[in-house]
Image (cartoon, rainbow, N blue to C red):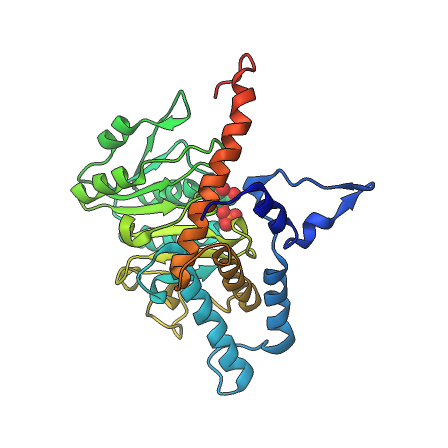
Length: 324
Ligand SMILES: Cc1ncc(COP(=O)(O)O)c(C=O)c1O
């Protein structure tokens, strides 16, 4: 799909927040990393859940069955969005940070003193803090440096990953600088030593099509509020891996993926909104299956945003002292 400025204007009409004015003037929302506004379809899905299906899961009555369906549909939608092999790879949580801490608790029980974890200086604190906490368990945390130009020191990356490395945590794109990292190269480094790869796709997922099946990370995290959805964290786990993790869980809780790492009752209404967000994005794409429409839409969005970025950088390059 190729998008034009008129498509962009058409899309604005889908977002009620963009109608808001202050002192008679329209508001401009420039705080991209803080999250996107949501289209009416997402707002309707969230309120629609409360209007008609509000219940807990696993009951033998209509609203409970609808709630089960709401969750399953959200997992299917996110599997389509992430290019994941099936809905069982998709777990939900409060946000990316909380899911990362849940994983860190499990890793803390598994990793031994002398084991190593590799993180980067370019990453959001949510993809650093949980793993730095493993130092309390005697785990060594190595940091890959950020070099001038705003990229990661890839030679340093290769040097940091070794036979003792259990986990490499890296972002696919930086929310601070916009740098897109060569995560496939990091995947190859992890393979050489048998380390797990954890990808923070929170900033990448709103801007590029995701393909978990091709990249094959062990863990990939993102946050629906960055791509027109509600505040929900999403975890993709490689098939079969979640069951191996000693996560925090109640004794009565389901031990299988994707439920294993989900504690307590999820935000069902928000998950109805997650499905609506994926479907909204897909409505801008072409194809028969949801996955095909998502990829088509995200490819078009990436190209359109590249054009916008080029327009922005052209004059900025001329400003003395501004490194671009
Ligand atoms: C790159 C990146 N990673 C992680 C996070 C944390 O996500 P959450 O707010 O879902 O915990 C953010 C939030 O801005 C982010 O930009």
